[in-house]
Length: 249
Ligand SMILES: Nc1ncnc2c1ncn2[C@@H]1O[C@H](COP(=O)(O)OP(=O)(O)OP(=O)(O)O)[C@@H](O)[C@H]1O
Image 1: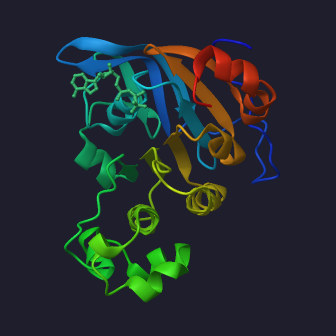
Image 2: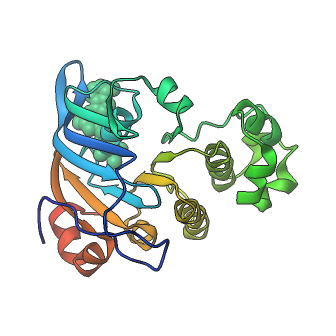
C-alpha cells in the first residue's frame, strides 16, 4: 500500500482523457476541517475532475462527512483551501449550489408528507429529467414520499440532485441501510452521470460497491489522509486496505 499522492484514473473505457488532465472541478488543498475551531480533518489534498468518480473511504468518525460538508461550503475550512471551478472559494453552500454543486447529505432529504412529484418540484428540477434517470419512479409520482421504501426515497433524492444538471455531485453514504440491488441501481446512475461529464465525490461505507464505479480512492483515518490510489489499486489491495483502515470492508 502506498500513502499520499493519488494515482491515475482507472481507465475503465470511459470517456477519453487527454494527456494533460483538465483542471479539477473541486479540490481540497492542505485542508483542515472541523467544528468550533477544533480540527477533525487535517492536511487533506484531494481533486475531483469532470467525468470521474472519486470515493472517500474510512472508518466511522474518520472525518468523511466533515470533509464533504467543508468541500460543499456547509462548513468553513479551518485551514487550507477549497477550490471550486479552478479558484479558491469561501462561498457558502447555497452559492456553490447555484453555480453547479449538488450535495446529497446522509439524511435523504425527501419531504415525507409531499408526493414524489411535489418533492421533485420543491427541488426545482425537471420531473422529466428525474424520470429519465429513474423511470421506475413514474408509477410513484403521486404517492407520498413517506410511503416509499428507503431505496425509492434515495432514488428521489438522487434523481432530484442529478436533474438539476450539476457540475459536481457530492454524496454522503448513498447506500446507507439499503439492499445491494438498490445500491447497484443508485451507483450505476451515478456512474452514468459521471460518464456524461459530472464530477463525483462519494463518501461510502459500502466499499465493494463503491469500487465498482470509482476511478480513484482516498482513505481517511483519524482525520488524516491514510491512503490514495486508483480504484484498480484499491481493489488489488482490498484485503490489506480493509485490515489496516476499514474494519468493515
Ligand atoms: N457537529 C459536530 N460537532 C462536533 N463534532 C462533530 C460534529 N459532527 C461530527 N463531529 C465529530 O467529528 C468527527 C468526524 O465525524 P464525521 O461525521 O466527519 O466522520 P465520518 O467519517 O463521516 O463518520 P461516519 O462514517 O460514522 O459517518 C467525529 O469525531 C465526530 O464525533
